[in-house]
Amino acid sequence: MGNEKTVRCNLLDAGCNDESAAFVNQLVQAGRLSDALHEMKVIRCGLMEELHQSQRRVDCLDYLIRQTEKDIRTTTERR
Image 1 (cartoon, rainbow, N blue to C red):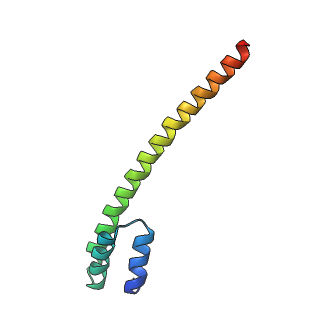
Image 2: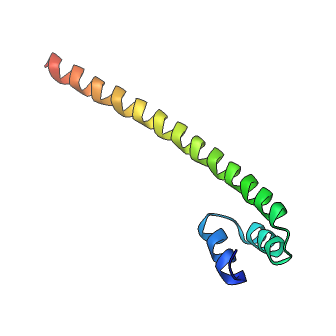
Image 3: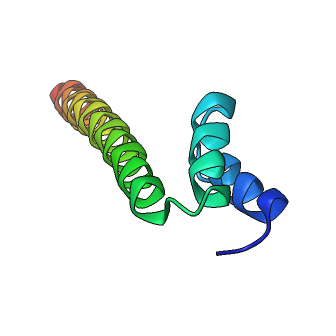
């Protein structure tokens, strides 16, 4: 799967915290690849949930932006 430094760097680049990266790396180095895969999938699920939460926040802001732009157009048209 790669050397210890490469695995750890990739995990950190993927957004894992130091503790999670070290744990997965230990599993990989011990040859427990199925367990490492499971942990990486758990971490991925967490990251996907964060992504979805961010998307919901962006959607809320988009709504407010559209409403504000609509209010500005309405106010401008009345003058």
